[in-house]
Image (tube, rainbow, N blue to C red):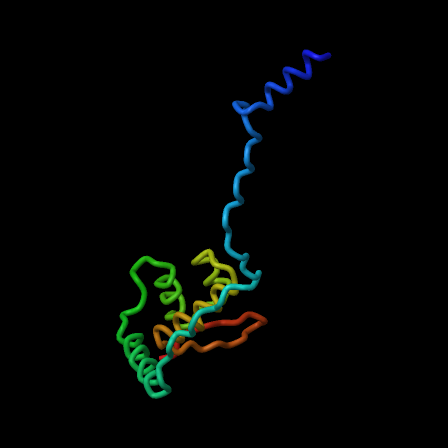
Length: 134
């Protein structure tokens, strides 16, 4: 047992390895709060007069347009609506492959607003019939 004590005494001597020093913790900044990101600035909008001018010029451009590209679904719809009796919603659905809400959106949005065309709508035998007004 005396030998074991001597060996341990030799290890603790002046040439012995010292205990490793723990590494320093990295310096990290404070954590940010958990909040939603800001929305940013609202884009500037034109004045009322300027917006009215833009609407008028876009309406002029819409009326100047010749209509739809030849062979397109819009051209097919226009051809059906130009017939003397007009066309029903189901006729337009068959010609284009669109659903009913898409046909109605095309009539009000594209024909009415973009192209500036007047579309008449009549109910006949439970079916709505659309036609272009002269």
